[in-house]
Every structure is written in structure tokens, then in C-alpha cells.
Amino acid sequence: MPDSGPLGSSPPEQRPTPPPAVPDAPARVVADPPVTPIPSGFLASLHPPVTIPGRPPTPPPAPPSAPPTAVPDAPDTTAADSALRAVLRGPTGPGTASLAVAGRYSAPPSDPVSPAPAPSAAGRAVPGLYHHPVPEPDPVRVEEVSRRIKRWAEDEVQLYPEEWEGEFDGFSVGRYMVACHPDAPTVDHLMLATRLMVAENAVDDCYCEDHGGSPVGLGGRLLLAHTALDHCHTTAEYAPQWRESLASDPPRRAYHSAMDYFVRAATPSQADRYRHDMARLHMGYLAEAAWAQTGHVPEVWEYLAMRQFNNFRPCPTITDTVGGYELPADLHARPDTQRVIALAGNATTIVNDLYSYTKELDSPGHHLNLPVVIAERERLSERDAYLKAVEVHNELQHAFEAAAADLAQACPLPTVLRFLRGVAAWVDGNHDWHRTNTYRYSLPDFW
Image (cartoon, rainbow, N blue to C red; front, side, top):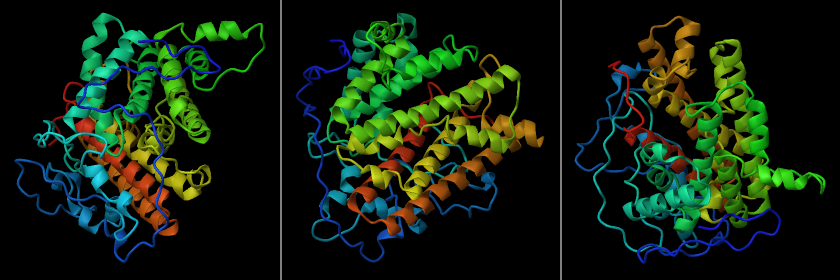
């Protein structure tokens, strides 16, 4: 595979010819239909029910105020009472076909008919966790995204040594991205998000955590890596040295290549939005690193503030680019839109804290996550702290859905409604990936 090329005028993207089963159409912008009044009952719910093969119907769970242990280990099915379900379902009537839920719950029109749905993947959900099930990701797309991302990682950016191959495969990024972006028109669109996800994970592992990461000197490493996303505009004498630095280590090579692909498909405002959210992410990395260097265990509210920056936000914020359309910058910048995105990032990141809890306890060093911080700061047992962290997640998830419903009512434009559906799909897909990735995660024995 060719390198992404020097900066400046980028050559046309050279992609491998896909197998006949997965058309590889160029990225396109999907036009939105005219604004249509929301019919009565549109905001009745967000998440259509999903039948999990082989699973009996789930009885209604206990009210949110009940302790987590009272909720069975099954997906929450109270979405009939959620004010958001119809945001995913979309309005009905003339001119609203592109807003229908069919785009989420069946393969997009550009792909061939998929095989019969596979049984739901193995994996146990955190008991008591408020979440919504998703359909099994399209196996044709999962296989193709997995094939392409491995070729990119190995051939284009030389991302990892041979001994890390098992970890790369175990990450299951193909399943992850297909589940999170069900409305992506083509596999090319899915690859935009997949490369960025893998690059972000490489920076986290190699600079911060598992593979040689350290809080010492992290700020300098992150700053130079960030210039692969937000280019350095310097003098003629020093520009060549900066360009050379972009290939100096795997994380920077990955950032540079993934961003090069992204900017060729995104609008300038979408690219700048992503750069901004990555700066937020890097600031969160630095806060956590500073606490590690000083041995500080933050208060719970301080930890949650850090997690609003060190979180998944850059992923759902690009859902419109991956979907082949744009949420205009003025609509994205609305305070109520920003609240929806922030809450989505916060809730999904606590999902990560809960599923990675045992993995982090087994790792060297003292890893901060929400259950650990609650246990130390509020003097609770490990079990009680974990269960309280579940409650914190549930409150954030409910707040996300309420904020999305409010925004849908205040600004019922087609692009806004579509973006809300995309963010909700990402939230649900992120949970499903954590639940099913038994290679990486296992639950504590607290129930």
C-alpha cells in the first residue's frame, strides 16, 4: 500500500480493489430532504426493540432508583418509555424516507444483501447497566473492514511489531466500527473512523500505557504527535525536519496517515472539529499523567471532570462524516448539541471503566478508573464502589437521552435528527463491543 504522501497537495487516495461482495464507491455527501414537521409522538422513543436470537423476552427492569443488583443481567428494554426512541425511528410521511430507522437496522442500499443474522456474540453485560442492544453487525462489512485495517496497519504505517499481532486482532476493531456506524454508506466511510480509532489507540498504548507509555515527558510526545493532526506552519528552514518527524514513530505515522485519509473525505469544518476534540483528549491524557506523577487520587468529581476530556468524544463527533453528510458548524456548536456530545462521551467512557476494571487491576501500577476512585475517596468496598459506578453511568446515560430529546424538539432539522441517531448508535455500538470483547475484558465477581 502507498504511503499517504507528503503534506500539501495530497494525491488521490489509492485504495485496494475490494472483493465483489463489498462495493468500494467513492465517498459522497448524502443530501438531506426538506425539513419536515415532526409528527405527533415522534419523540416517544429512540431505540427500536432488537430481538436477540435464543433469548427469552426480558421482563421490565426495576425503576432507576432501585439498586443495581435488582436488575437482571439482560439488555434494558424500557426504551418504550424513553423520550428518544423516535429520534432513531425517524418521522413518517412524504419526504422522510432517508430519516427512517431502516438505514440503521439493515445493510445500507449500496451493499449486497447480507447473510441471515448471526446469533448474538458471546459476552455478558454488566448487571444493572442501563443500555440498549444492537443488531449483530453485518459480517460481510466486519470481515472487509478487518482485512483493510490490518493491511493499513502492517503495510502503510508499520504500526506494530509481529509479537503484537495477537493483540491487534483481539481488539476486534472491524466489529467495533461496523456496530458503531450502521448508517455508513460504504466501507470506505467506515475506514475513515477505523483508521482514526486504531491511531488513537496506538498513541494511548505507546505514549501513555501498555507498550512503553509513561507520564514522564508525555506532554512533549503528545504535542509533536498532535502536529500530525494539526499541521505545523513554520519556516522553510525547519519545515523539512518537522515533516521527517511525522514518520519517526508508529503513533505519529498512524496519526498522519489516518488524518490524511480523513481530511480528503471531510469538510474543513468537520476536520477542524475533529482536531479540536483530539486536543481535548490529549489534555485529558496530561491531567491523568500529572496525577500519576504526583500520586494524587482525585476526588470523584475531579475524576469525572478529567474523563470528560480523556474519553471517547472524538469518535461519535465524526458520525456525520462517516455517514456521508455534514452537521453544519453552527448547529454542531450549539450549547445543547455540545451537551449531547459531551454526555455521550462521558457515558461511554464509564462503560470502558466498568468493563476494563479487572484488566486494569491485573496490570502493573495503580490505574485510576471510576470504581477505584470511588472506593478510595468514599471509603467503600470494591464491590459497593463498582455498583455505585454503574449508577453513575446510568444517570449519565439517561441524561444523554434526555438532552438528545430536548435538542430534537428544539431543533427538528433533518441533519440534527440524523446526527442524534448517529451518536445514539455509536453509544449503543460502543457498549456492545465492550460486552462482546471477551479477549480484552472480563467482569468482576460481584454478583
